[in-house]
Length: 106
Image 1 (cartoon, rainbow, N blue to C red):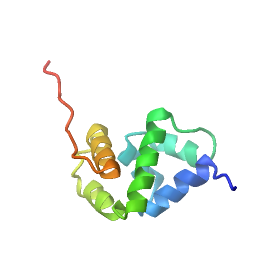
Image 2: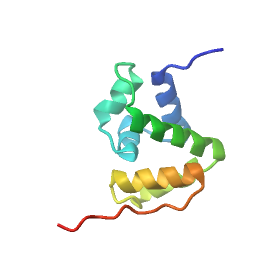
Image 3: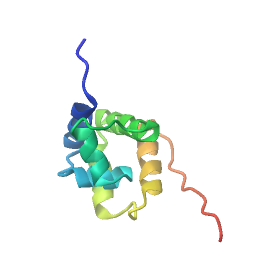
Image 4: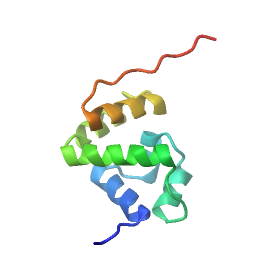
């Protein structure tokens, strides 16, 4: 059984999503460009939450919904917020409605 490295997994996922740069994947996941760069160069591994999001993105690619997700992302539908992106990724991966997080009043 062949084991895929984290670097190959992240790079392959980015390409499967049709994202042109590490910066785009970073914005989608709500992490820095440097973080994605370290993952793709094998210098670091994703944290538990980031790894879960990557798993969700793999499910989205496998289900054929990647194009819709990337189009939403590029249109600005996530408003640049990683929380909104997280909820949309999770909802697509598991087929459940996206629930917006409640914001606390100051």
